[in-house]
Length: 290
Image (tube, rainbow, N blue to C red; front, side):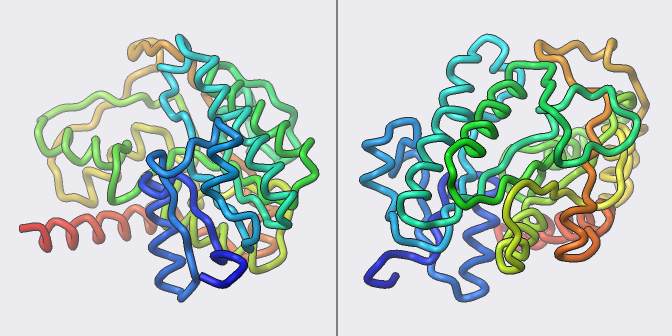
């Protein structure tokens, strides 16, 4: 840490993406201040001002309200963290001259497209979570802060609660499993997302970008590949969204257009390749813990 402060501040450092960011920055020799909910409440400007140094290269906001179904009955709570707090962070970053790296979602779109969503597609969310994230995007754009707004989708990691770890467990426990096959998107490894975000920052990228793994699939296809790479014999069967009712509506098609990102930092590795890396890391973590 310099006299002015750390090079990077990572908010939400204990979460899936925050953990990936902190590991990446330390591995590359960057000075990082990790902050989680015990150290800072980003919905409170006073707490934010006391905990987050103004003088740093970048503030990385990995904190979010991510309970998509829960947001349907708590839209005010989701909007407070995903929307209003982003405005506070952006003002803080602007006043100190830092770049704010903030994450948003494919859920700000309506899911009715038939080709990947460009970065300038207008907001049209179909659920409360998507609306709350759209509020955050607009607050960031209006702030005048130097920023990277990065939309992503289907996030997973070797740690935390996520789809890959859940499906690994279920396909190991069950002989048969039905998974939705009429929702299409792009999976995203948290480690890949952090590394690509840093590459965008280093390349001078500013504004709105989409970052995911390369390729696309349905949740059924994703699960079948998880089982295949893990060597599980579970029969993964397709089902429809109507057969798997949830409180929040999900977009049927949420593939994000990666061209702006790839023009700056190169092609995104295929999701199968990234999945293989995460499963390898999981095996290594499990062998160490034994």
